[in-house]
Length: 77
Image (cartoon, rainbow, N blue to C red; front, top):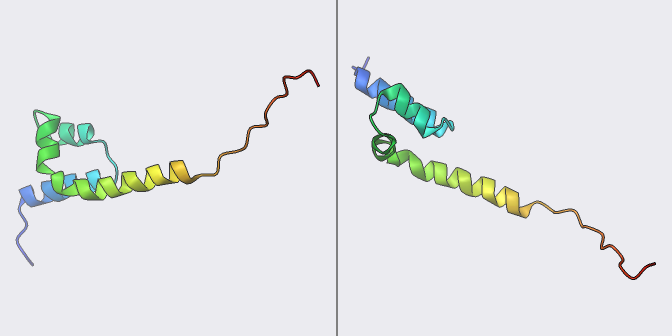
């Protein structure tokens, strides 16, 4: 069985949390990082997957069919 360091497990756990959508601030606090920028810089390799996920969500927001609003008549009829 390959030797696994505690650091490797910690890194894997943080990566998985970020990929599952855990807010980076929560990951920062769990890891004990002094700043969120340290966490985000360290785990920037996760960002492309997160960007793709956001793009998918945004596309879904803007491609939904919007209900038509009936125009109100203002000519007194």
